[in-house]
Structures are given as C-alpha cells and as structure tokens.
Image 1: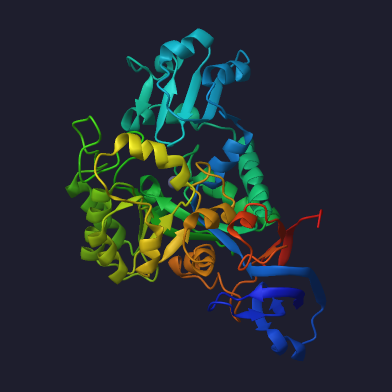
Image 2: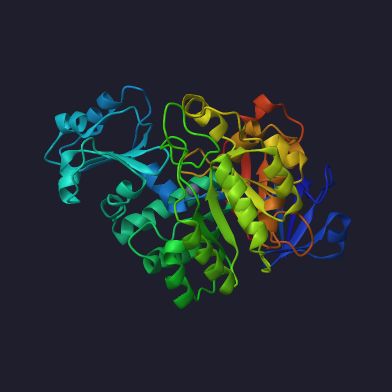
Length: 469
Ligand SMILES: [Zn+2]
C-alpha cells in the first residue's frame, strides 16, 4: 500500500472537489482523504505541495508516429529549400513538418535526383517527392505532389523501419509524454508500420519497462487481422474503437464540405462510397465494436452523425468522431442528444486558421468547442501528435471553455469514452496521477503555457519527476 500525500488532489468527480491524500494498492485507489488514516501503508510518497489531477490522457494521437517525428528532420521555418539542403547528407532524406508551399519534384531534384527525398505534408495525408521516389514506386506524376490515394503509394517506403528503430521511436515517444504529465493515450498505430503483429508486439513489450496506458484504435485496414489474432494480456494495453476515415483534410481539399472550396469545382470527397462505408459499419457492429471516425468537413460531420444515430451502437464502449473541425447547429443539436464523443485538437485552431480562410467559401462553425461543450457533448482533448505538440496544457489554453471542462477533456471524458475506471481520483479507479507545481484550476491562461509538470505517476509508480523543482 502506498500513501500519496502533501498535495492538493482534484478528484474531478465534480468541480472543485478536492482531497488531501490518496491511498493505493496494486495500482488501484483504495481510499481518499481521512479514510486513508485507517490503513498502514508500507510506503509514503511526498508530493511536495503539488496540485494533483487524475492522469492526463491524449485521446487521439499516433504514438509511434510521434516518436518518429522526435527522431526526424523537421521543417521549422519558411525557408524550406534551404532547410532541406541543410538536412541533405547524400542519402535518402525523409522530412516532416512540411506545410505544402507548392514545391515540386523539380525543386527537389535540384537537391538530389540520385537519392530519395520525401517531404511529408503536415496534414499527414500527402507527400511531395522527388523523381527518384517516383521511379522507385513506378509512378508517373507531373509535380510529385501526391495527395490521398497517390500518397498511399509512398507509404511502403516511408514506413519501412527495422524493429529496433520502431522500438526506439516508441520509447522516445513515451519518455517525452511522461514529461507532459501524460499517463496514457488513445492511439492509432497498428496499420502504419511493418506489420500489425510486429507493431502490436512492440507496444506490448515496451510497457514492461515503461508503464504507460496504450489504448489502441484498431484501424479498419487491420480489422480482419485483429479479429483473427488479438490475444494480449497486458494491463497497460487495451483495444478500443475501430478507426475509419469518412473524408480527407482541408489543406488537401478533400474534407467534405457543404459548399465548394474557394475557386474550385469540388466540395471534397467521401473516402468510401455510401454502400462500402455502411458495409464497414455493419461489419464492425457485427463484431461487437464501436467506431472512431475521422471526420473534418461540415457535410461529413452531418452525414456521420446521421449514420451513427441510425446504426445504433449497443456495445459498452461509445462511438467517437475524430476531429469534428467544421459543424452546423443542426448537427450539434443531434450530437447533444446522442452518446457520441468528439476527439478535438485545440491546437488546430491556430495552425488551421489560414488554411481555412484561404480555402473555404461558406461560413460553417469552425472548431466550435464552446458550442460542443455548451451542448454537453463529451469532448476529448488531444493533439493528433505528431501533427501537434502533445502538451495538454497548450490544449487547455486553446480550448476556450471553462477550466474544469477543459481538464475533464483530458481526464474524465477519455475514461468514459473507453469505458474504463480511469480519469478520476476515486476509490476503484486506476492509480494514475499528473502532478503540477502550480494549481491548474486557478492560474491564468498565460501561466498555463509555462506550468511545469512536477511528477507523472502511472499504476502507482512515479515514472517521471521534474528534478529542477
Ligand atoms: Zn490522427
């Protein structure tokens, strides 16, 4: 038994409910407050006057992809060509963090036509490549700017790593997330690298050394393999919703809108025909699973909401919509009466501002977190890392809703969404805590940007402690 004390614990059961100590046993909270005094703990953890919350979860990200970005060449300025020249080392060059500025294969061929150069666009749906890559994938293309289906041809090259490197990426990602006070993720990884089995094996193994809650979305592409072959017995790993794509992204002009894109004769696209999409939903329901659907445009959100209401979910785990970037009031009203969670990425507000104003003609509600929250829709805070920085305090900063509701989006709500006893400091709940040196409930918005994590605790173990404190 461990007694955690000398801290203010926000239980998150209701606003401002606090306690002064927490007792855990075998990774589970068994008493709080004065009830702890009737036990004799064998270990006492002094939390140094910090402010403790249930462990923070990033409810939508790509764990291994985040680790890859931590190890990768990342474009950081507008001087893209010069940055690429600096990275270039007479070998194949893979670059992340590129915002499409119209560079073509010809621009990249100037740097090298002997080695592959691949720029992954920051929307993670597209690539710009040089001629060498087109030659390798045996694909003729005028510009080398490959969107959606064309971009998929590059994935076998982009995502082929040694097992050691994948392990290193995963490890790097977890250690980095500890520093942000993150104790777990809902992550979409299983279909992007060498194989489903190998990726699953890596995630399973890493938690033996580094405790971390890895809740895995099952990408539809590996759903058959998963059905045939999933027998993991690991308290840190959990299989959650099945991930599907309904539309694309705004920057690729593939997000499905109610009206055409500015100066274009298209309103985006559906990744699947209605028939195929509904077949997928039916198959998932037949296998007793819930869904997580990538949905960005306002028309996409309206259609997906209608589909999920029509194809009712009787499973214990609720359905979720990933992104929900553009919306209309009619759909928000429907969502408010449904039991569908939204996985939102508050940092997208800043990074998508220009892309949206440049490309969209009509006036949908844009990242309407306030409206979602006011309509009591379950909101999950997330970063879509590697797309955005996974620091949850930055997410809270940008969310624009009450502090309590924002913190719920990183604690209580992700727990509800995966039907787990996690995300509150409450008897019977898992002993995961995020401790901060300042009081997140009362500090100013600006202070959120600086606040340091004091300690990260998973399964009652301190996995990270800020030594500077
Ligand atoms: Zn994602």
